[in-house]
Amino acid sequence: MPIDEVEHIWQNGKLVPWKSATVHVMTHALHYGTSAFEGIRVYDTPEGPRGFRLTDHVRRLFDSAKIYQMAIPFSQDEVVAACNAVISANGLRAAYIRPIAFYAYGEIGVVPGKGAKVDCAVAAFPWGAYLGEAARAQGVDVCVSSWRRVTPDTVPATAKMGGNYLSGLLISREAKELGYAEGIGLDHNGLISEGAGENLFLVKNGKLMTPPSAASILNGITRDTVIKLARDAGYEVIEQSLPREALYLADEAFFTGTAAEITPIRSVDRRPVGANGRGPVTEQLQDIFFGLFDGRTEDTYGWLEPMQQNTTETQNAKIAV
Image (cartoon, rainbow, N blue to C red):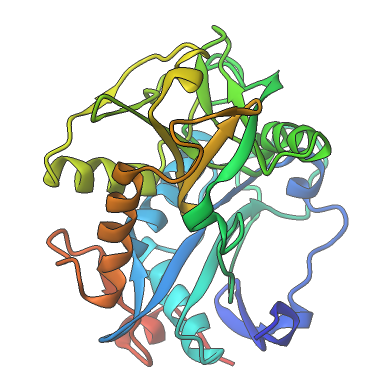
């Protein structure tokens, strides 16, 4: 199903036709990037559609808004119910869900006034592998960008806010213009941070290494998933600061993210990583991760949340067509 064939979107408490979900051109978030958002995968499992760590994503949405003192006018349970509603209304079994909360039309000053209006919407649509289906097995070619990630004392990377992604846009666009699939940004100290929209892992001597949360990264939910799955599989996972050259010396490297899932990196700055393809550790972690969705891996953490339909929670969220 192409995205323009999706029928319904949830906006401020009710389902509306997809093409009717509009905002005013003077919306505050359009001018200043004051929006908190999430990306959530729904997988078609043998037990039916399951939202992967849906509640964790919604919780982070509210955490991001809290940093900017943005009061979302719905509860976390209501937003979870809205996510269920758009999956049900559009008849989706596998999808990408995009909840977003943003300062709405009403004021044009940089700082929204007390009680400024906050709108909330949830969309759902089919979306395949972010960096391409072939990339899951073959890996991608990336480069280190000339653009640095934001510093901790400027814009908090912990918050998943619309304005933060201008950094990712510059990193990714530069990489693509140079012929790469994606770019990697360094932090303010010149150390490895993350991709334009993905967290980063390196494998060296059988150990996994990933930059810490203080390295201007978004503390990704897929990143957390991989850390837990890797440790359960017996791997040592080290969160530490990493110099740029660690990319060139790694045995394996891969991206993680809701959109990217687990995507191998086969080269950095045209230097092959390991055997210039997906390595055995990356392949094993992919197998464990994707096994969650076809039943090969037991969901011991309760990450797969059933996408309920016509539930009491949905009714309480005041959702109506």
